Length: 339
Image 1 (cartoon, rainbow, N blue to C red):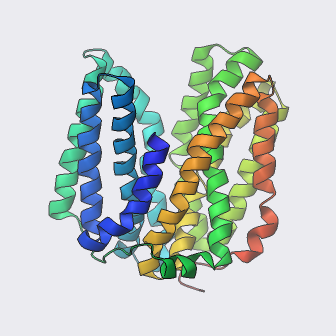
Image 2 (cartoon, helix red, strand yellow; image 1 turned 180 degrees about the horizontal axis):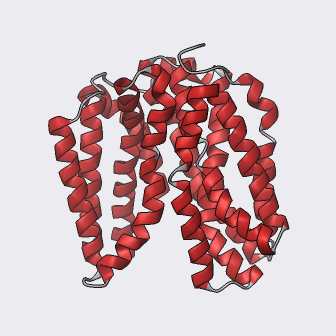
């Protein structure tokens, strides 16, 4: 339900941001997310829980196109890679902080308090952004047929869509399934598996800065190639090894998995005019949600049920490496130095 809502919100973004502009849409998304999160503890059945998560996913989905448009409006083109890296601090930090925050709250309160606190803080941040936020004054664009055709006829859009769909799956899938893989296949305890995953996610917080630096220095295409080689190879090795090599890949693969997003969003901003960027993100987003949040974890889960976890990771790695021949279709050079 979160994935379906996320895809819906991404598609609705153009209609909302056209009336409100991107900055106000970012603030509205924060208010809706906070409200829907605070409402979750009051649900009384599975059906109402599913509906509340659908609303939450929609509120989250509304954010991303306007968030990217707002970030790129605030900084000069030469610094887009670094700016996107800073933006990517949010999800990567959340992977580390969210479970720790939940455990800390549960020491003194019931589970509902976690959601009330997160929702309340989100509402406050939304109000602050509406009052003092800058950038994103440009109105959004409804993804009408003419705009969609202008975007989808560009080969770079489809190459990036494919890259980012597989990248989301190669990030979320292993994150969800690695503890089970380590425990069931390699005999690790739950504590050992979670400890390794936590270490890797702490390191992954800093990964986008390296990707942003590569993007600004050598170009977005070089950063995307670096991602495909490193993460694809790590997943292949993850499925083939044990012992020290396995531990190294468990720690490094999540770090490599975050390298794609800063150069990917930078490249979209580079090849599309400002009024088309949020529409392009809205078009890519549902594919990311379906493949990355839905199909990839389910695929790994089914492979695990069949006793073939290692084959699942191997296939994910091979799919990323198979994208390398498509890289010449992406623009090269540094942002602001070629088009």
